[in-house]
Amino acid sequence: MENVVEKPIEEEKGSLFHRYKFLFLRRLTQITILALYIGGNVYGWKILQGNLSSSKILGTIPMADPFAVLQILATGALVATDTLIGALIVMLFYATIGGRAFCSWVCPVNMVTDLANWIRKKFKLDRDEFHPLYINRGVRYWILGLSIIISAIVGTAAFEMVSPISILHRGLIFGMGFGWTIVASIFFFDLFVIKNGWCGHLCPLGAFYSIIGQKSIIRVHHNHEKCTLCMECKSVCPEKQVLSMVGKDGYTSFVNSGACTNCGRCIEVCPADALNFKLKIKNPEKEVETNA
Amino acid sequence: MDEKTKISRRKLIVNTLQGIGISFLGGSLWAGFVYEAKSDPLILRPPGALPEEDFIKKCIKCGLCVEGCPYDVLYLAKPGDNKPLGTPYFIPRTNPCRMCEDIPCVPPCPTGALDIKSVSSIKNGKEVLDINKARMGLAVVDHENCIAFWGIQCDACYRACPLMDKAITLEYERNERTGKHAYLRPVVHADFCTGCGLCEHACVTEKAAIFVLPRNIALGKAGKHYVKGWMQEDEKRLEGSKSIETQKTERTHKKAEDYLNEGF
Image (cartoon, chains in turn yellow, red):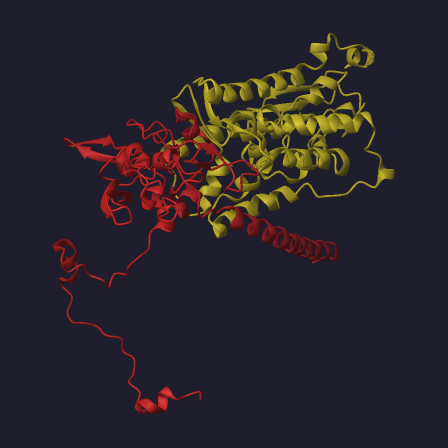
């Protein structure tokens, strides 16, 4: 305990790479995945073919967007086993390991909204005097429900018809058309209207992964003993409600909320090394030991 | 029950109703848009596509068919194309289907929106791909602007057709105007036409005078009460029918001049 207190918090955390380790890795993952898909269409590479809705790894292992498949099933159509297996593979991965990692490590919209957020921060647009519009973060779950209901009524996957994620991703691989207007609207919404407006409030795919990824094992872990209450983590977190344990006396625990995207920004910015990725395998109840 | 829980329950109910209200508003707009945006009656789908109603349910918009096509015939509809977003289609006038024998666009489909069975036939007890069974659309000839109908010799579509003399035949007729020439008119046969569009692509007129339309647009329907009595197969439909059913409209008891003059 003592050595933590004496550690000067202003100390540089090392090289640029070290300070932005996860951000760098995330961009690398996002761009690599995108490049492999584009190569699959343009040059016929076999590593990743298709797009985020459904694809094949090395021409054999199927992957499918489980939320898109759910909407298709809601229309009353039965899909081929290839798609069902693909959806199951993706779903199992995020449910057991990744949590909501899709949002911050794979989704191309993340780069758009992160840019909006970065500019927002640079120009300090987040002040109360600007009377920011308020939308409840729960709205995305309503949109998730609506996607399923509308799919069943209209007879086609409803969110897939309007999804900015698919429009951007498909656009980059197969041609954008007027798709940039939708991407721009998300950008300006996040930049001028609400902080993390799309990803943190409206996106039903994020909501879907929040639900299925709730029990995944890779988790951000907060160590109360090391925490200096500087609140840097909360200021960078796109879903700050998930860090509710920070600042509570004697409360050491995992980030349990499914809304956490495992982006790792909080870990990078923490000057006291109080936050880390850890495997949550044992019972979280036991983890909440106190020393208060 | 204490006061606190009462209020929170009331709050919960009101909040839920608020959610329902705004969902109904947003949902109606969203559903209305999707309902309009999901259909384009003139869209031409890849070979083996299910009927449009089922296709639009099953297609997951992955583009694996587009990537499968070696001639870059297929597009995925992008915003601004005025087609159901993200679904595959082709434009025969600019790039017709080449009818590959191994149909590389169909097997990659992960959902079954492109149905392998519909483009397969049994050969020697084995199921093999058969592109001639594809029914992407049906070629239709515009008799007014097809120059062969004017008496000018042109058989571009006939020669472009991969099912020459089956899907398109030439019909000869004496040209009475000149007295010494013949009309060589192209005639499309729906039983064989796959809708590949090679004819539309080959057509020499400024705007194609032979073009592919979706089959449900191009074809009429006679109704099942018409029986082709001269065809054994069709006449079998009458087997088992017990009596001739007539419409049970009650006969009027008025005189002809009465009901004919009604309304005057």
